[in-house]
Length: 600
Image 1 (spheres, one colour):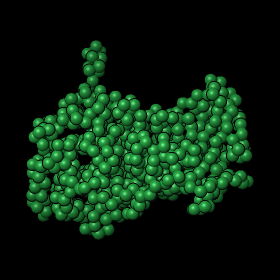
Image 2 (tube, helix red, strand yellow):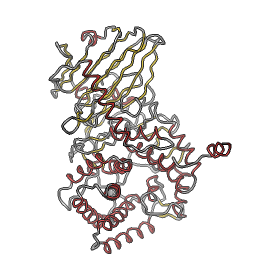
Image 3 (cartoon, helix red, strand yellow):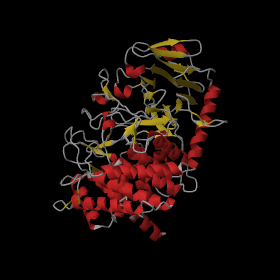
Image 4 (cartoon, one colour):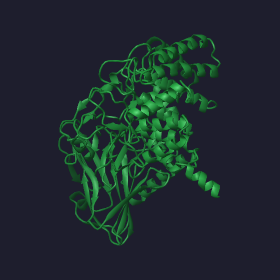
């Protein structure tokens, strides 16, 4: 498999990646950030997987049930056919809350003929450290690892358990089920109970999508991206993950491999902004609660990222026994970036607070806490905005005065002023306005470079950076301002390669980036649209959409030449930017539509 041809299923507690031929190659239980139980994605020999073997006469097709996160893989040779319907149960309980257990169900649906297959059930617990041993019991199959850390995994099925474990041929003449769970079940699952879980989960997703606005153009892409963002939210705490995986490399064979199963304040806040604009209040409320709980003291500084349960220490270590995706080492768990200082997070968080107050003004909770947070954010910005930091791309070298960080410091004060006016809190407005103007003047003076005719990556630099494109969406500058238009043109000239964007081209701690950061291309397309190049933006957008995988999913990066997906997957950043861009472009009338309209 030469690309990330995977679908994601989940229940807002954990997630599973299913390959296009129906193999589960990545799954962590009981939570997103737990040790893996299947990790073939990171080591084809040792990692462990759960798939099906059929003879060469079969072909597979894969698709999501419409408006759901339920994935179907169909095996067919023209006469004999069966489907594997994969999902993680999630639905409303009768009392309150959600039924979202640490388990997934594989519903085997007989379609036609007499299909035969073999099951490849090969769990490897605890990131495949030690030895996983599998035993057949009366009611279930249990796998356990007790060398380093004791861990267990349970498989329930109505098929012959010995045939399943030993990979013997199995004829599919009727429907069957597999349930793989972290916990032993109190009541033994049945085909009937699995089908009931399927129907309830299907209704949950259909109801969730019914509350999502419909668009004339790109509606399917917006819908799939919205569900993907939902799947990357951890509803126990309100955290939002950057991605469901760890250590998928930005470039094959290189060392830019990071664990993304954490909540970056920046990524998560951008996701919440987009999801709340789509009308989903609960996910926004949970995230806000997550942030409020992280800031018990008014003067406590935010980390750039946290564990999904609010953990503050995310010690990074390497798993040397795993070969890595396509032999790209190291495989990392934890992320040392949590120690970094990035001044932009306050502006991004303040922007979310402002959006929530605007969008849910009649239904906002925590109003007094939000005002306390607003004052605290401005206090921190006032104290630290003149200091250098690591920037949005988390450079591991010396701190610099990054333009994006400065713009977001300005954004923090700008949005705080707007919140103050909405809430009728006027006593601080004059002082905050003075701070806002001071930061603005500093940026206009030091971030603009006459030689390159653009706002640059950092003060007194000639290096360009795609993140600077966001100065317009955050309201710092008008889209038609000559300096912004010139910056967009300069970035297109220097950072664009075959329609895809580099984040930057100056060497970082690991050399020159050699893949495109997907969100940057979406930012660039948005900028083209904003400066009036709507047709060009639409063409670039549709070209970019064609680089998604077979299910419309994006990872973090795209290889410039081969266009294969790289980096952690699916990536929240990429999908939130897809939604924003698609909504902007959904109102653009293309030349073809104009011709069609005139003929009509």
